[in-house]
Image (tube, rainbow, N blue to C red):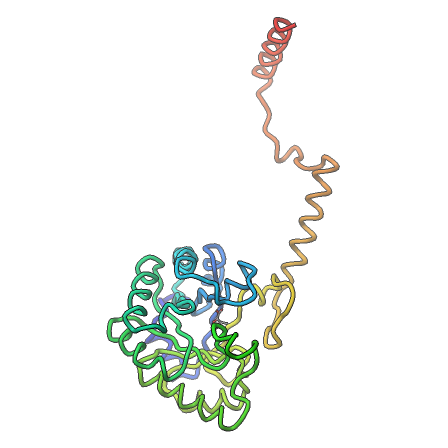
Length: 289
Ligand code: KIV
């Protein structure tokens, strides 16, 4: 990926029918590797609360934690990837002013290029204010995990015709407010396709079928690093957990059997220094006796 990915690149990709690949990243080495691999957008998702911190939802994640991770990812995005961060739970819903202050902190301290906000048409005034202030905003509708307690679980959204129509209205309101893209999470494929067709801005799906303009996966799910519940929409491209466990078992074994560290990992004194050292030790030990 030679050039920097910007909001204009993404708009052109939609027009050209070129799919967008987005992936979450939470630290420097992952950001560096994903951006080298050509991932267009790196998302510092508040999913880090679940896959990195071990929380059961994204609700406990704070703005300071997001800024900490965002700054690492921004330093690692060395190959032109656009870096977008989630604003966490209740750092943007209370008032547009508070959203502006949260946005200022994460953009200035975290070095990101854009922000993602969860919610529908009720967020339109906030998005307009942010966009007018120069903040690129990505929307996020369907299953919005920060509302997990209101939904009563991580369930697919937009499953009735009425709910699907509401989703189209939400998507349009976000586009009109100035969002540059919209994540559609856990939405039936037919609904995601209808939203995608009706928007000029790209849709990025996760559990939303193949007809979105792009896809996003959670990094830890994608490399098989997550334990416990794995969402149906995930595809594992690697089995890194197995690799880590096998390597760690070998390490424990080698430490216990004395095969690690071996000669390759060991530094020795030069022969003359070693002899002098042994003599000094002997003299010291004799004096102490
Ligand atoms: O927090 C996150 O990682 C997300 C993606 C699943 C879109 O919002």
